[in-house]
Amino acid sequence: MGYNDLSSAAYAVSAYLHHGGSSAYHDTLALIYYNMNNLSGAYKLAGEINQKDAANVTALTLLADISGRVGEVKKSLEWYEKLIEVAPSPFNQYQLATKQFMLERNLECRQSLQKVINDSSKAKEQNVRLDIGEGYAEDVPVLAAAMNMLGALAYKEKNNELAREWYQKAIAAFPKFVIAQQNLEEMNKSAAPARPATPAKPPVKKT
Image (cartoon, rainbow, N blue to C red; front, side, top):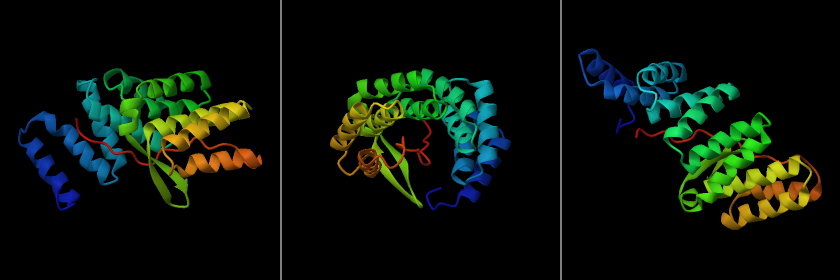
């Protein structure tokens, strides 16, 4: 893995497990599959791990992320709800909020984002990668990303004054926040609907 030879790593861990190695390394294999972009293999293995250990954070993270990545938003939401129960971090709360936003569950989305803001010290330290468009992405503190999405919610509800306030707070929290700056400019020009910021591939680490 140190040399990014993931296929050899997958073979080695598979052989280890086949010959009676500790089952604790099944989630390691699932992570290797994930990083190889073998999403179906990672999802299947994560599901098997979840059946045996419903509190395995790595498996829940993979199940939530991959289902969302393939367009199963409702299923992803359900996995994130389970993940939040065992790992209620601002990052996971934000990911849950994005699914609620997409499903137009606005009240729940706002409540999830408020939890992110309430845990502002951790939310400042944790980053989320957001798609800007045209192949570009930016790493943004979760706190600023949550403020931007609250702005998008307010804009969707035609509360421009509140939306402007949240966009400005997001930019104040992270002055290089391109998406929030674009949202504020677009709203001021009344040119386009606000963008909540879609998470790019999040880092998934074994815990």
